[in-house]
Length: 450
Image (tube, rainbow, N blue to C red):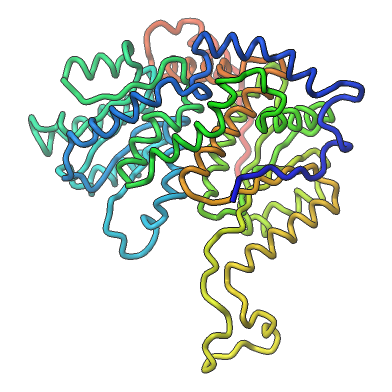
C-alpha cells in the first residue's frame, strides 16, 4: 500500500492566488533548486552522504563490540528530537514492562536531577555515551559531556575513551578537536546539513542502529521521495512536497497562523515535536510563518480539539493516519464476562477499531467546521514509510520558506538567545550582549505574590 496525500478543504478551495498557475510558481523556483543542489546546499534532498554512511556507520558501531546495553545520547534540538521520534516509533518496548534492553536515554535539556539520576544509576561499563553537536559549541551538550566524561573516567579510568562516540563537523569545532586530542571515535555531520534536517544522518541513525531498527530502510524511504527530485529538479511542480508547500503558503496568505500536526498513529506521536522544530525554526522569520501545534489522536480530542473546532478560525491541519495498525483484542470474546447492555455494540469489534472510528469522527468534525486539512495516509508504519514522511516534511518546509522569501536553513533569532546565555554565564567576547542584559535587569520588577 502506497503513502498518499489526501486533499481535504483548501483555503477557499485553492492552492494558489486567483489567476496564478501553480505550475508557473514552481517553474520560477526550478533554477534556484538546480543551483542549490549543484552547490551542495540541500544534502537532505540529494543525500550525497548516503553511501559513505551506509559503510561507516556499521564499521564504527561494530568497533564498540556488543558489550553496551545503554546508550546515553547528549544532544538538544535537532540532535535529539529525531532520535526520540524514532525511538518511540520503532522501539516502544522500552516503555513496556519487563523490557530487557537495549536502552536509549536522551539527555536533551538542562535537567540536573535527571542527569544526576542517570549518572548515578547507569552502569558505566555497559554504557556508550554519544555526543552530538555539529558545531561542537552547543553549551548545553558540551556541559553534559564534561560531566559524563568525568563520570566515565571515575568508573573506567583509562578505558573511558572507549565508551564515547562524537558526532560533529568533519573538520572543525571543539568536538572535532576533542576527538583528535583524545583519540575518540567519531562520525561526521554532513557538510551544510543543519540540525533540524539531520535525523537521517548519523545524528539519528546511530541511535537507530543501536536500538536495532532498520536504519537502512529509513534512508531508502527518504531516497524514494527525494532522489527523483534531485535527479530531475524540473519536475518540481509535480512533486508532493511542492504541492504541500503551496497549500501551506495559501493558508498563510489567508491569515491562518497555526498549523496542527495531528497524529492518529500513536507510536508516531513524537514526530509532532520533531516537525514543530523543523517548521518553527525554518519559517519563523521576519514576521512570517505559522505556529505548528502537535496533537495526538485520540488523546487530544479530550484536551485540544475544542479549541481546534470552536476557537479562532486560524488553523489548518496535517492529519497523519494509517489503516494498517494493530487491531488489539476483540470485545465480547469471553462469554464468562459479557459486555454490559449499554456497550453491547462493541461485541465482535477490536480495541483498535476505536482509533479508526475516532479519527473519522475528528475528520468529520473538522470538515463540518471548514478547517483546511490534508490527510497524510501512510500505507505502512515501518522504517521505510517513516523515511519517506520525514523527507516529505523537510522538502515541504524548504519550499514553503522559499515562497515566503526567507532562508529556511538558518535560525538567527535563536543564535542571539544563545549569545545572551553565554554572556550571562561569563563567557568572554560578549560585551554587547552583557550590556543588553544589564539594561534588561535595570528595569524595575513588579512582583505579585500568588
